[in-house]
Amino acid sequence: MSSHTVYLRPRYAETDQMGVIYHANYLIWMEMGRTEWCKARGFNYKDMEKEGVLLAVVEANCRYLFPARYDDHIAVVTTMPEASRRMVRFEYEIRNADTEKVLSTGFTRHIFCNSSMQPASLPERYHALFEIAPRG
Amino acid sequence: MSSHTVYLRPRYAETDQMGVIYHANYLIWMEMGRTEWCKARGFNYKDMEKEGVLLAVVEANCRYLFPARYDDHIAVVTTMPEASRRMVRFEYEIRNADTEKVLSTGFTRHIFCNSSMQPASLPERYHALFEIAPRG
Amino acid sequence: MSSHTVYLRPRYAETDQMGVIYHANYLIWMEMGRTEWCKARGFNYKDMEKEGVLLAVVEANCRYLFPARYDDHIAVVTTMPEASRRMVRFEYEIRNADTEKVLSTGFTRHIFCNSSMQPASLPERYHALFEIAPRG
Amino acid sequence: MSSHTVYLRPRYAETDQMGVIYHANYLIWMEMGRTEWCKARGFNYKDMEKEGVLLAVVEANCRYLFPARYDDHIAVVTTMPEASRRMVRFEYEIRNADTEKVLSTGFTRHIFCNSSMQPASLPERYHALFEIAPRG
Image 1 (cartoon, each protein chain N blue to C red):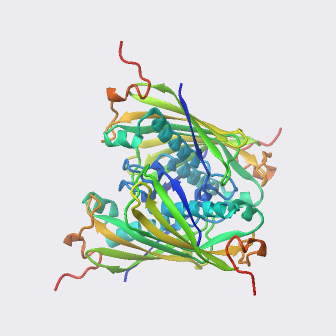
Image 2: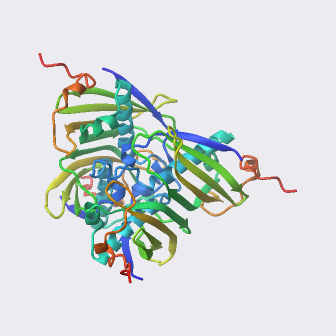
């Protein structure tokens, strides 16, 4: 199972008055993880969308263990434990890249849609990229 | 179990290039639901925080059934099915307020913290507000 | 010159670690002001966009006098001092609605575009709404 | 006048239903520009804030020439044309880093504050970093 790591610095805009990163922003970091996971696999999600294949989020989950703070050195590790013609699941580990401490874990589930946002089977040319085995 | 409903209009800023509301924003709407749930129960979360009692998010989950769109009429229904001296769980149903269609469901779990962000037992004066039964 | 006021409660998500509302959010509140200004004038910006008339921002400015805070009672007063077939300018005053203190002032300038994001003259049926005088 | 460039990839979360980056996000990119400008000058804004010196935004301005899009290669060029013991002004040029096209220009003005958010003179140990000449 291929994993990919993207690094980022939390923005001041992402902090809240508790002095930590507001929790909803972790879902955006997961999106960055997916975007870069796609590139590491050899394609751009941007191009896939232009070809009419959309990844619509159907579930998102995040557990918060330790807070991230402004300008920390953050690593988002993305894996894709599950994919079929219909859906795909990504998992994420968000770490402090300096201390290796796991700050948060989460997953997102997606269905493939066409450009009208209707569920659609993933075209065959993308199967290898999502590690979907050819039909027997 | 008391529920509370808050109404909102999705902002243009909250849309994405799929033409729908970006999924992370639902977590922010849930936060609005909690804030207004507290008011409906007779206290302001703002004041509670000033008194050194913080609600730190330890898990957030959202399932997306149908997309919300810019300037839709949205209802966020918040309930609190579970609370103890240590933690509280909120559940949410996000509906299109015109059609009553459920667009998304979710929950958040929180622990009570002191102003140094350390886990702390909820002070007794707040127990009734969170429907925590007095010790026998 | 018609003005319109919209009321809002700053979200926890909008705060930053200074304990105040992060400055970029004021531009989003201005967007809410424009949306409601349109409604008060008798049309929905949402519908205008569906008909292929877009308002693209070409400049935004905001002066910050006093900070807004989480759950304050905020009023955004929107006026439209200038409009032509090509462009429109909105001005905003953001006040604490309880104290009437002016927290911030700003403006945005926009050009009308077609659905391909190309500059385009505002169709005549919208002229009255934007208080554009008929050609002599 | 020292300039500093930071590179970024616009996030899907930052797009809107026009298919471009929502305009308020440019102010957040300017914040990233300032943060990295400070590092290039040899200090962390994060540490300055811990020492009780805050940079509060008193004005922000942005002109939008061409839209940025999801996953573009963006460069934010930051300069600081003006600084005194009381205030500082930053200027920004946001470019498509592949084409060198200038997408947007802007500035922010700030005052130095103490940790209670009250205006305060910049401590002398920071003068050189902000290129403030010693008193004659």
